[in-house]
Length: 240
Image 1 (cartoon, rainbow, N blue to C red):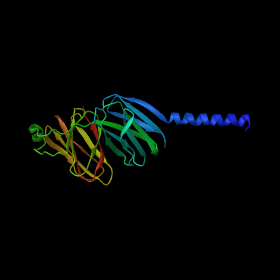
Image 2 (image 1 turned 180 degrees about the vertical axis):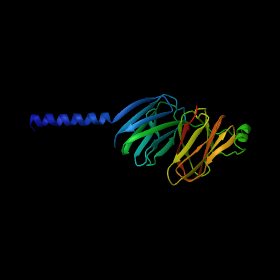
Image 3 (image 1 turned 90 degrees about the vertical axis):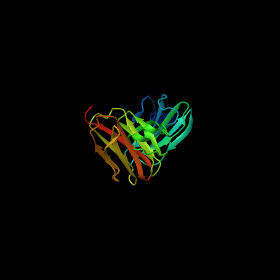
Image 4 (image 1 turned 30 degrees about the horizontal axis):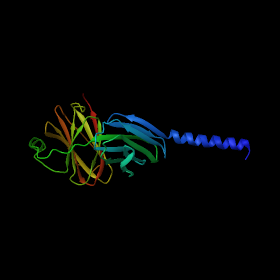
């Protein structure tokens, strides 16, 4: 091989190696959600969390329909959960007492994605005030979750599984609240203001919304009628 060809081969190898390095990005993430972008198959983001996830988070990935983005969660360098489905909303839960990193990569497609970190608190058991507030209904499949952001990605394990999402005032006094999920599932939701139901959407559509007057404390009840999987709650505040 001539020196010119050898030099060209070395340059090509260096360029290819540089491309691989460019396609692996590292981000420090201190919030409860992160917006990223995949530029194409093989592109990979590593998200270093800063302890905000707690010791038993549910980590969820949301992306556009038609893309195939996957993710894994690592605790102290050991993989503890993953979701490699093709669903546009996917989640996994893990015990994470150590340093947590989330790996997101594109199998197919390009575009934006959102990683949401949810600190799941178990529903209070035998709590009289809690059960009275939620119409006296006590069910071990119910989870009580504090939500302070404008969107929340959760997961329902099957028919009857229910999430109560307590908002923190970020919704304003006249919000539009929407729930989206993968086609083929039937997830419904109701919105409560100071314990009173003010709107609901119980259609089988994969994207549903309702608009309410909500001057008080707001909770959103989301439950599965049929199917299991992830859902995305989005809050649009008309007035702050």
